[in-house]
Length: 147
Image (cartoon, rainbow, N blue to C red):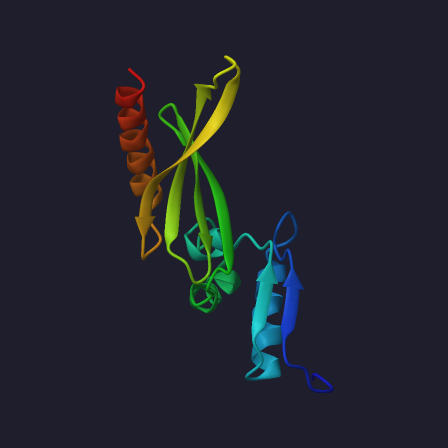
């Protein structure tokens, strides 16, 4: 039973290197408190939402999947590195999702610097495959322009 009123639950790093019970307890806490918003900071929500934990191995955790799928990321930054390209999936709520290509270029002094190129802008979160494809396309375009 929760005593006292609160306007917000603030949870730091549930399940990030700790037991999966952290995730289960956050949902229990939220349900007990009623209509109070829950903010999760530095939580590996993708692991809970996207199938990292197999439901047949973690049946209690599987009961929380829908709860965590309803969370909206206020800030999201995830590295993407595949097929020789490197970049980021990025979003600051309520802006659009962006895939940012990072590639090395030489500046006027001949020094190697990293240039950021927006490879994709989307209203919805792109899949990993869509991110990699956007990075590959942008890298190919950058390569053509540098010739």
